[in-house]
Length: 460
Image (cartoon, rainbow, N blue to C red):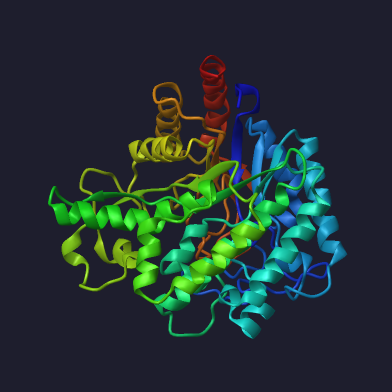
């Protein structure tokens, strides 16, 4: 990776940007039926990028961005998830990708970002079903084949390791059930099988690359006690390292495998191993990850016999050495550097920070500029730590993508939690005119990454 093709840009999902929830043959996803509440919007409009993508790409290009990681919506391409193809949906993404290329922005495609087609969620309970797994593989192959000449980089699942802890149920289209550890491991196994089949298929095309992606959870022990250190290490192994190992080597963590053996879950690994025999060319060309904050684990809070997958949730405490955002996420730029180095040192693959950002409350009164110095400080500190990882520690880093750099609803639908360099004029319950207004950080970013490109020219 040279400074000329270092990827600076923006990362989003389809349901948080597109809107147009029932336009041009799109079928409903599980997000399309979520109602607004006191602290959130519904998902029907988002920021209407379906109709405004040219405007947004112009904003990105003018800020010096050369990469956009977006999602192709499963239910826009196949309305019921496993039936007929909606050609209008594919044609929309054709125009969308062509516009990115016209703006000299590299398209990076994510194929699943938690918005399960509603029909598959209701009929099969989402990704716990082998049928849904194969329907997703089919959808992915249709999209990959259609855009193989225009897309080089593919990410099958956003934050795939979220399938290993509590988030896995809502992220997989799981609408009913006991939320047992057996169900969670079945969902995660199906996601790994799907990943392997999709990655192998990507590698059947020349010059295309695939990367597994995790939500990397950097964790620190609450004290020097051996129990805090052990529980923290174990939480990291089950939440982060297991899936990263699978993406990079095709092998799961021996610790996780042994846990599965002791809890009558070995048959799930048997299915994965058979898949690897059938689809051997599945290892990642790069490792993508999101990073927003770090956390601290106190072993004394973890109830005896709790599954390691839940150590992170049960044991989390505040880190008094770090500042906290408006929404309770602790800001840790050094943890970002450590994450990059650990991933690169262990797996020796290019590392791709695909999401990073800070959500904050902001308002615009129709005139003036939003002075978001806190956002500038957040991105400046994280990018500077990334540069140290490259220059001092020797990491091979593909790029840096901020999350939602044009304001979008948060993962819970809260428009008031704003991540963007560009303000979008709407609130949770008032769509307004959706006008795009660059903030102070927008103008800072362009100048800052030009400076960093000069440094990268020497580093690479």
